[in-house]
Image 1 (spheres, protein in one colour):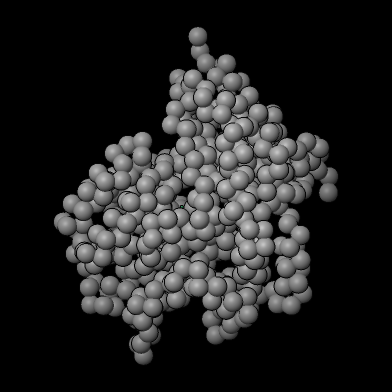
Image 2: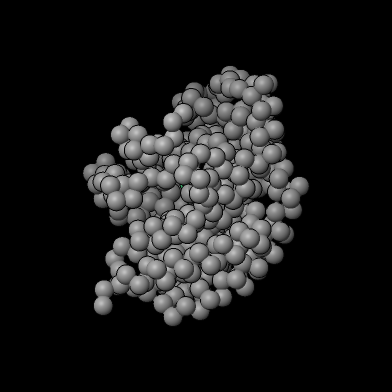
Length: 432
Ligand SMILES: *Cc1c(COP(=O)(O)O)cnc(C)c1O
């Protein structure tokens, strides 16, 4: 293929996600030819460190040999079969292993995170209907919460920029204050949740939360105590707890799942992103035997009549099994602890920068708030980072890293030095 004008051809034929396309007049998309480990290689011959794991999906680096072998083998064995009326080894084995890891007995599959949110919300409301409580059909989420951008998921996504244009389409959920440590914190947020649930539990099916880190809100981090209190309040009021680990799952927060740090078990657990190690689209909603049993009946209409064409795709499930294998084989959680310490040391100058506030880290997620009058810091920073061979996309005025788990010394140096240099370059453009 002629790759020379790939970016221009892309702009003529591809509608890129989460993008005001006119912006690309100034900074065209970067054409990537191949990837390996934490690096992306452009058609221009340059290399870029994928420090946001390609939108938080990649765990063990790109094009991992174990992943390539597993997918080639699966492709040669069984590419796909519909999961209604049929089953296969990868989906059974994956469900068994996820159940053993979470204590949640049944797994329902889809292809992306937003669908997992929709499934969890539908299952919760349908559970209450099947249990003779049809009035419990509303949801509550956290301020600044993000759970995906399809119309149903937008109901619980409290980010104005993503929701405003579609407000008339959305049946809005309620929001309660975030336990963000920079704000009111865990105890005050739990008290607000207690008040809200006391008033509204009779019409509320579920509370949905991103545990420990509200990533899309700008890496807002909170104490596990909030999750313990939320669990107790949901139990007291007969409300489901949906834990959305689409971003925080698979080691990002230091444990395999973030909710483990609170010692709680959710009623629904949403997984996606890292589930396949960043190779193929797959999401899963895990739930309890109690929820499953409420749908088990002679009456068809009491069943969960939801499906996607690629539900439980064997290739994607095989990729997820390989992800779980790699956690063991590479002892990833332990290795990440030393990677994080080494990178913390290299990041001392960034953390100590006079314009940086609220330096914070949870597991393999780093974030810093930048004090600047520049309204478009994110766009400027992204350009300066790219020029230094780094993929970093601040959220508003929050700079963050969410790198793959395979950073060697050279990659860490590249990241720490490039991130600081891109900050200096951005701040040098401030109006005087
Ligand atoms: C990314 C994300 C989603 C949505 O997943 P998609 O695959 O992009 O639809 C939902 N919840 C959280 C917490 C996420 O970070």
